[in-house]
Amino acid sequence: MTEPPNTQTPAFSQSTQPELPESAPAVVRPVSEVDPAAAKLIAELTAAGHSLATAESLTGGLLAATLVSVPGASSVFAGGIIAYDTRLKEQLLGVSGELLAAEGPVAEQVALQMASGVRMRCAVTDTPCDIGVATTGVAGPDPDPQTGQPPGTVWIAVDYRGQREAKRLRLSGDRMRIRQETVAAALQLISAQYSADPQL
Image 1 (cartoon, rainbow, N blue to C red):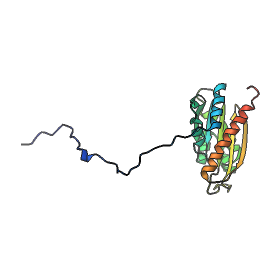
Image 2: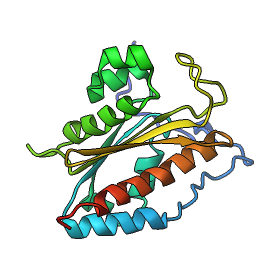
Image 3: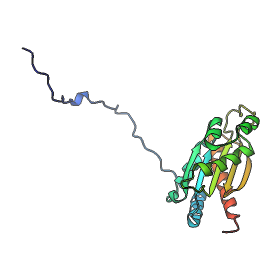
């Protein structure tokens, strides 16, 4: 005689549970320190009721991470786009394909168009963000494959309500140092462009 199937869920014994090796280290993530320049900028923009968006290439989100490490950054920071691949600069940020083909991704006008594009793409209402900031460059260790520009060649740009400014950097050091110095310079350029507003 065939027994009816057992419909009860079998209990798993302790021996069948997966076990981590005793030597497996605990995952501990270090708490990032708040960047003073980012904190000052967030405070100023919060007081003015301004919004900010980032378009990043070589910094790969480091600028956005620096901004959001500041408590209360959500009142200012709308969002960001990491357009690391050159094609995404055109597809997501509206950078001219002809410009990218002619000059490559590390160029003044590319940075300016990235900054303008992210103001529009990160608009949470019908109004663009007040400030768009962009970073594009060569972090190394190899030169830019399209133009041969050396590591440390960087362009940053800010679009503050249609007033645009770009700055070229010549940096040295390893990849992380170049990216960190790019973030610091971008924060300075935002502050300089914002502070120059005669209506403030």
